[in-house]
Image 1 (cartoon, one colour):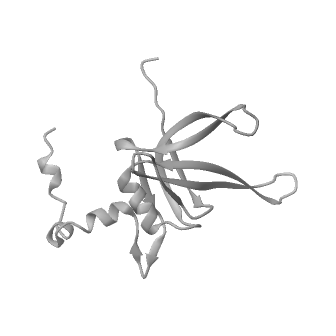
Image 2: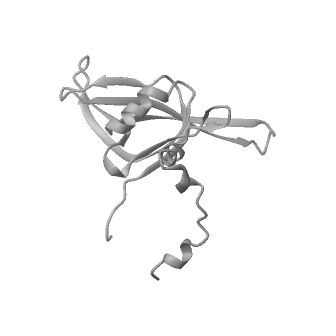
Length: 152
């Protein structure tokens, strides 16, 4: 095997308001409970069925923690990209080792996009928010001549 890849892509809804905590180093961390669902029609009964999976998401990226703190609430529809991480901890009651698998968002290889609109046609997609900070002349520019500038 030439290499490996640890990448998780999920679209789902928050099952609770985000939990923001301060770490020992003074930085904030956000914890999310994300539900992903799939539905299908049972072939034998014709009945509609649904299965929901719950995912623990931990966000260390400071910019994303700020976005989560300001804009996300229970029920928000989001898209995330992160990595799977399993951590080991000791259960204080039983003294046994326990394991938790989480999706971790930290560094440059992670992202979070809000998929719900904030109202009146205003899209809260982070990519669109970043574009809105550009000067208006750049947003309205015709990009049809960009193909001529590609060096290959």
